[in-house]
Image (tube, rainbow, N blue to C red; front, top):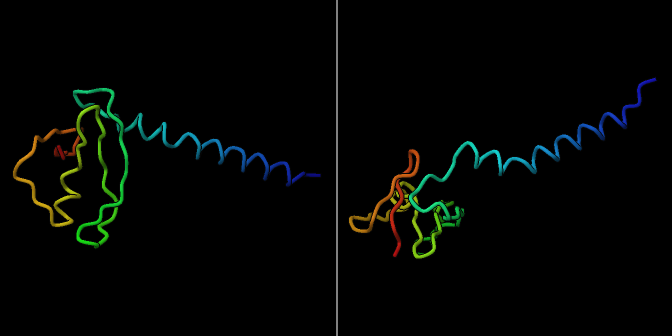
Length: 96
């Protein structure tokens, strides 16, 4: 006789381990290859003039915070100044 409860338990355990590994897998696929290797990535909620504009990917360094330019532009923020950095396919702009 087949014990379905143990099979379900194994499936849940495998799924749980996979979910726990997803952040590490994502970082391996999309590494942060900027000049400063000690930068951290963060996803923040973008709000402009009390209007929510979704998530904003930022890179947090020792002396600066860089925001993904496409998300700022979609929120109506146009930046003609500020140091820009390309990481992978994305352009980031300094908020300092």
